[in-house]
Length: 92
Image (cartoon, rainbow, N blue to C red; front, side, top):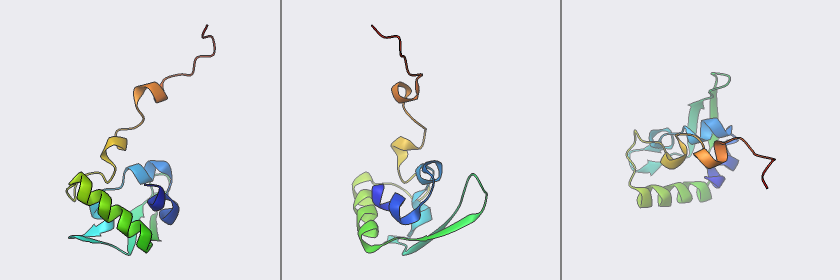
């Protein structure tokens, strides 16, 4: 995920909403991808470097994801409850 974030320069909300089909064609990882930014509704094209393509390929092989699934499925639903909870400053 870190490599893809660096290559794409996407906002976090756009990064976690990537689907497998956004960066693949069949069994190949694309050298370039285009996604629509959520905030601006504008298309953004980015290049996936060789190390990123290798990392994404290894992830897809391990995770057994289909093209319609989120690339990072555990992150697609948002932050988990403990992280998303209000910060308490009055703890004893």
